Image (cartoon, rainbow, N blue to C red; front, side):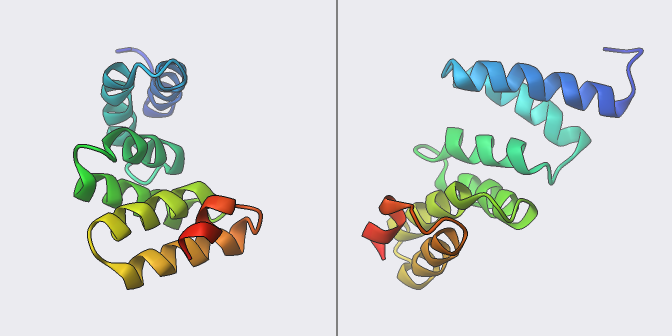
Length: 117
């Protein structure tokens, strides 16, 4: 990818990451996402996917990625829902409630978020 500019490299890294993520090849997707975030650290979709990948093993890191995704993609109700789950698991009931409520404000049909509220 040496002759490509940063935007082109970002686009390629995200395209491959999307394919690997959809195939649940998370370790492969992780590498491409790290590359993409090197070009655009606040990229909403890249942050969302990193948060999802890291939810079970690296919760604090996952929460940071999901927070960035939620802040930079105001229509991503799932990022708020997953952030709420992580905050709940960390014992932050107020933060969890705020994240669930933010997700519901975006998508009032999110039954999982309603359940947690």
